[in-house]
Image: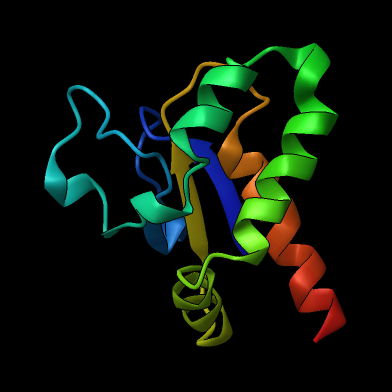
Length: 115
């Protein structure tokens, strides 16, 4: 199962492998709170700045981000973890519910549905 949650929320037993998918390390988070940091799966700096968590740009952001992800070989690292089974929790720092971790989960679920 793939979960998404803010990195500042309490760690739960069913989080499984906790994967940070932001480009920047979140303030106040210790390294032992995260199992894996896949910073290369975060949106490009250009896309991140353009989007700026503007909800009105959400659909266009996802389209552009999915395009980036489709060309990103690091997605295979995440897919291999998921295929091994167990829970995966994608972590993000943003306060906005419209963030790259939510979009990444949607992207992965589409890939897994096709395979």
